[in-house]
Length: 137
Image (cartoon, rainbow, N blue to C red; front, top):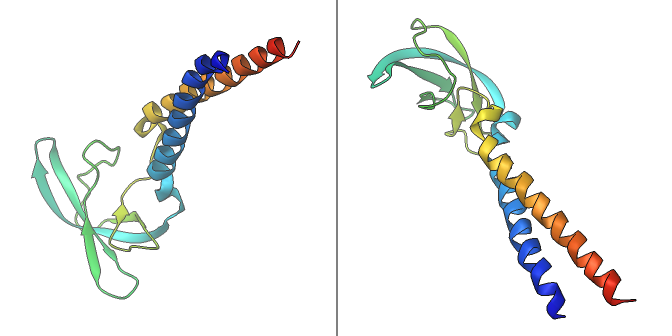
């Protein structure tokens, strides 16, 4: 049984990294399944990077809510006031909305951790299988 400690020290962290990565990628890409609604630019604000659009979108129960683009996203602010833009609204919590769908560069690091975790998990299982095959002879 002591022979399986080595593979266990590789399999368990690999599995944890794989699960953490899968949950983080799911959380990062959940906006792809949200409802697209028409919003419109109602104002501009300034920050250290320049002009930021303030976009108003409708709520399902009536009324409106405003949102702003992510600071490090790919949404290009500076559209004229009144311009229509697509807003992805969370069907469960309509107060949660984004102005752009996630792109690969926004969760590539987390995906890399998952790939490495899968490598260690599978490698540890193969190592344990080889040990088991050698011990059973």
